[in-house]
Image (cartoon, rainbow, N blue to C red; front, top):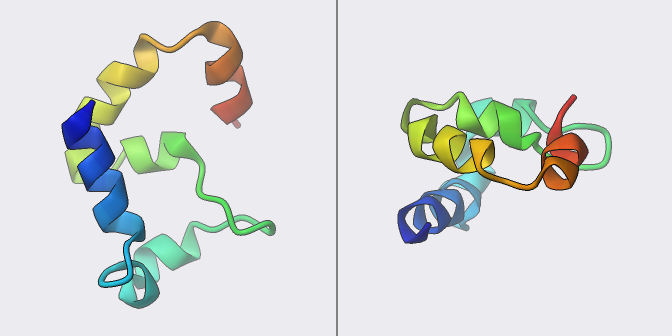
Length: 64
């Protein structure tokens, strides 16, 4: 979980987020990025594995 947290912090951190055109294009109208889209990133394998183990209610909230 620590590795995933660190990767997400990097994606949305001050040094990456403002310059990451790909990530900025994934924003919805409210400024959120679907976790399923983040899980598709090259380093998303770990996120996908964790997501499979989440409670169904959380998975439903994050699915499109």
